[in-house]
Image (tube, rainbow, N blue to C red; front, side):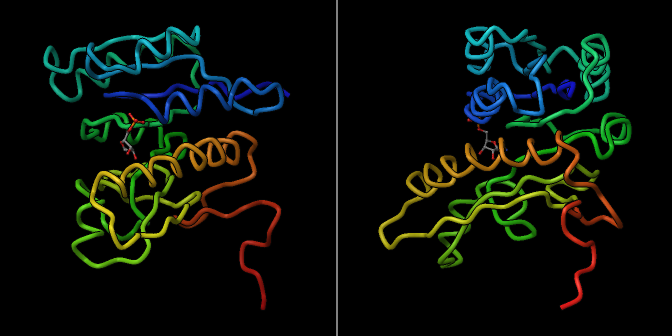
Length: 209
Ligand code: GRF
């Protein structure tokens, strides 16, 4: 079966991007990473993408307004025949232009168990709240930040001596497992959005218990 042509949008180190590229090297993986775009020319992920022989395009967000940046990126997505977009640390708020155009074809990873802890500094906020568990979520992108139908989540424990860095490292390791799993679910067509929830095709949408 043809692989789903997938782009990854980054702004930084791109460790999630690298996990997706590595997973997609498997012959049976349903997605192919055809393009990486960065909102910042210094993004470390650009070097990693090139090293993996994935076309990687730098954009300087300072040269554009929000929609201008998105239109420039979108033109490259179209040119590369992209069908699905993964946000992986794209640290720019998105405008309705890109979100509406890629509705149900754009997914994001967020470092918390949504709907808890939307926004920034999730690890410190989990510690401050005394949470015993924390984690990460892959979801479809909607206009409201860190909101959208949830595809998959992974949990990690919060340990007694954790600080924000140790907890972030544990969550990031979980992200590197979760994102390839979630992309596989989406690209293989096993999940779809129904009434703003994700349903899995091999399970009934409304199981009767
Ligand atoms: C990750 O924590 C991800 O959850 C968040 O941004 C970070 C990106 O890290 N959306 P990396 O660039 O993938 O290492």
